[in-house]
Amino acid sequence: MRFGLRWRIHGMATVRREYRALQRANDGPLLVCANHLTMVDSALIAWALGSPAWFLVHYAMLPWNVPERRNFAGSVTSRVLVYLMKCVPVVRGGDRRNVAGVLARLAWLLGRGEVVLVFPEGGRSRSGRVEVESAAWGVGRLIAGVPSCRVLCVYLRGMRQRGFGYAPPRGEHFHVRLAVLRPRSELTGMRRAQDLSQQVVRTLARLEEQQLDDR
Amino acid sequence: MSEMEVMQTVVSILTPYAKNGDALSHVGPNTHILDDLEVNSARLVDVVLAFEDKFGIEIADDDVDTVNTVGDAVRLISAKLA
Image (cartoon, rainbow over all chains, first blue to last red; front, side):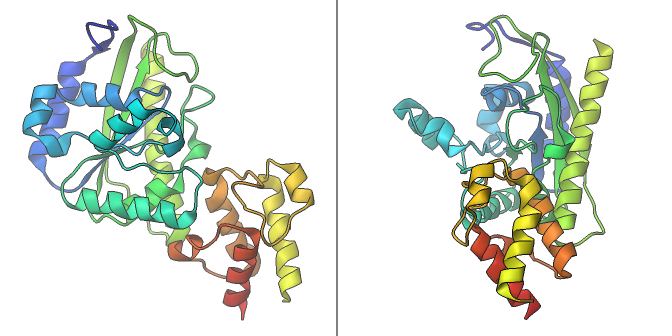
C-alpha cells in the first residue's frame, strides 16, 4: 500500500503507540469500531494500528473482520483471501438467527482476547459522513454481551475522500484519530443495544468533526 | 386482540420503514421484512421498539432472532399478548 499505491497515513507512529499501550494495558476485551467509506478500510485500519512484524508477534491484536458475504462470494480469489484471513462472514440483513450466530462468534473471540473490527454504521456511508441514525444495533448487542468491553473508535479518512467508494486513489494521504470508551447503559433489551451503538457512532461523529475542523 | 388486528397494526408500523411500496401493497404472513419490504436492517430496532410500545410488551434479543417475516412478527406478538 505504501510503495505500490503510494498511500500515506499521517500520525501513524502515534496511533501505533496508542494501540500498543492498549495491548499492554490488557484490561478487557477490545472491539474496534470504525467509520466506513471504502472497501479497503479494514486493511487500512490494520496498517494504521500496527506493522506486519508487530502483528506477527501479537497475532491476537490483528483484528478479525466481518465482511459482507455477498461482497466476496463472486470471486474465487477473494473467497480464498477471506478464508485465509481473520474473517467471520455475515449476510447483512440476512436470517436473524444467522446474524445472531455471527454475533455470538464475535463475542466468543473477544472473550478469548482476540480483537474484532466492525463498522457500526452497518455499511459504507452513502453521504460520506458518519451517519448517527444508521447505528447498527448489533454492535450494541455485541458490547452488551461482552463484560468490560473496551471500544476503540477509529476515524480514518483520505484527504481527497468526498463520498463512499471502492478504493482510495493512488497517492492518497490519510488522517486517523482514535478514542477509547467503555459504553454503559442503564436501559434494558433492545433499547440498551441501541443506546450502546449510538454512543459508539456519536464518538465517531465527534472524531469526524475534529478532523474536518483541523483541515 | 385477534391475529388479524395484530397483523394490521404490524403492517401499519412497518409502512414508514418499508422501501418497497409494491411489496407493501401485497403484504402477507410470508412477506420477508428485510428482503421483500426492504426495511433497512439498521432500522429493525426501531420497528421492534415500536412493536413494544404499541402492544405494551417486551421483546428480548433472542425473540428478535426468530422474526424474519411479517407472519413471524404477528405470531411472536400474539404469543406475548396471550
